[in-house]
Image (cartoon, rainbow, N blue to C red):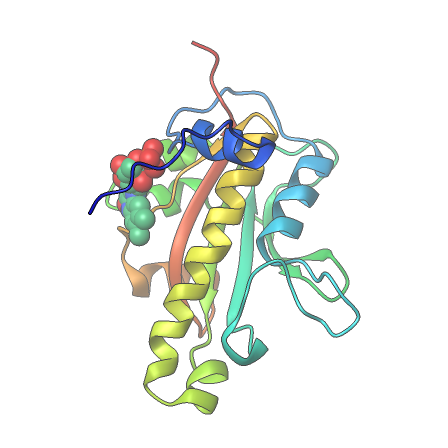
Length: 195
Ligand SMILES: Cc1cc2nc3c(=O)[nH]c(=O)nc-3n(C[C@H](O)[C@H](O)[C@H](O)COP(=O)(O)O)c2cc1C
């Protein structure tokens, strides 16, 4: 038996879901620090006094880290920063932005170099596998999907665009950032080009 479900009158959230698309062309205008703040908060921000966050996490182990390569954000020096959810701050780890290198190591997906910011989401699997063993690996991958969707939806609600990029050379990205964690997703973000 098939039941045809009622046609929905979209809620505000559903309207954002309908508008969400992978965007690979960005207007050259800079982002604001407020926009960056919204993006990082929705991605992995802390939402209560227990340290729980905007995304679910197996056992609240929070294995992910978020880096942002800043090319063009008003009042923020270009370079690479690491997001610190505890203080809702960003901490500079590299003086130079790495948009071009990220594009190159993402198998020449050159739109990445055009974006005013690029997020790199990495995982320290041990935080989750230490509790759940091998099964923790899939939990980490589920969690990065939650984070990416939050970023997509917040970007859409702000009139920005992004795309999940999974095709890149892991070792090259690790060396570029000088990190031990494993990179899982690269997400360039910019203003949606008005066409
Ligand atoms: C895990 C994953 C990896 C992806 N990798 C890439 C990528 O390397 N380059 C790219 O341009 N798009 C990438 N995409 C985006 C898909 O191409 C896109 O989501 C799909 O075409 C559907 O379009 P939509 O997101 O606009 O609905 C990836 C998406 C996911 C979920």
